Structure formats: structure tokens, C-alpha cells
Length: 246
Image (cartoon, rainbow, N blue to C red; front, top):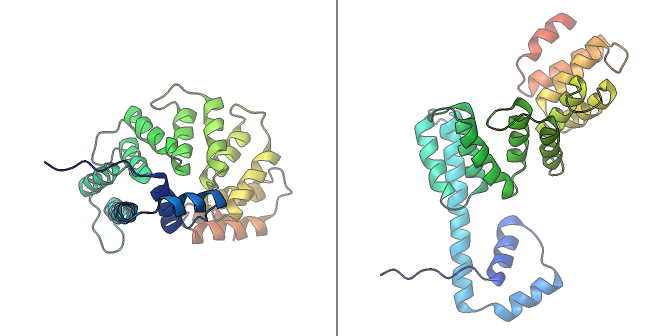
């Protein structure tokens, strides 16, 4: 009969965090490592690092199958299988991608309730993109009761972790006045913040604001500049605005 692996020690968690995530040790953590580092603990650390490496390989393989990148044919069934294996390792990214597959109906039947469950599991583990997706479910009322307040709360949580899509979504809420006082000025601030961080949708929104003169004086040249940036960043719909501006 196979022996059950003991739960990971505090010492192992500290060292794995240092080696895998590049974090630094506090003085207190250094003392714990010095006191608890044994041969058994070293083996435990090696095991945890191998698990993390396996998780990363699975996630990358799943994304390639999901999006059909790096010469890999798009295969939703394969992607689902791979993310399910990564999920068994406790991967917060795997939770997110399983949520995405239920959200979009990739291989599995579209199910917003299941999407919410997986997104929530990923968000609880600290994945910023999942927080943003939960915000969108509340905004649209898909899988959960519609709530602008909840949508904004999740977008704001995601923004604290640097998620640019959430920044753009907050901008959209101020643009339309969804759950907040409508303000083109505040919307533009959020669009600009996300755009400067490289978000293509936000770049397009900034371009639109300059083209239509929302919160700023109409400026076709700046609209064209931002529309071209959006297109270069992968927002193909920006081509229409570019055509109008040129």
C-alpha cells in the first residue's frame, strides 16, 4: 500500500515560494528554514518543485490546444483534458481555464453557473483574471443575479492586482453609468490607464473618445494614433476607425 505524503511543512512552503516565485525571505522565515531544514524536508521541497513544474507544463500545453498556437492544432477536447489534469494539482490557472471553457462553451456545453464556480475557485486562489471574469458575469447577469455593484467590486479587486481588462471594464461602467454616476472624464481616465499598460480594447476606447470628443476636444489625429496602436496590439475592429480617420 502506498504511503500517504505528509502535508507540506512551513519550511517547504517558504523555500518553494523563494525558488518558484522569486520572492525573498524575511528574517523570521530565514530562522524557520534554518531550524527545520532536514533531509526529509529537502526531498519534500524537490517534490513540490516538480509538481509546480508539471503544472506549468500542463497549463502551457492546455493553452496551446485551446488557442491553436505554436504549431499545435486547436483541440478543445484535448485542452479540457489537460486543464482537468492541472486542476487536480490545485492549479488556479487550470480553475480559470475550465471556467472559461464553460463560459464560452468550448468542448463542454455552455454553462455560466459552472463557469462561475470555476472562476470563483480560481479567484479565491488569487488569480486576478478570474476576478475580472466574475465581474463580467455579474455585469451581464450570466450564471449569477445581475448586479452592477458586485461587478464593480470584482473589477476593483482585479485592478489591485494589475489586471488591465478590469481597468477597461471600470471605464465602460463609467461610460454607460452602470451602477455609478455617468462620467466620460472618469471613464477616459480608466481607459487611458489600461491603454498605457498595453490593453488593446482600452486603446480603441481612447481612440473613440478622441474621435467623438468625449471628455476631450475632438482630435482626429490622436484618434488615428490610438486606433493604430489598438490594431497593432491585436484589436482588429480598430481598422474601421482607422479608415474613417485617414
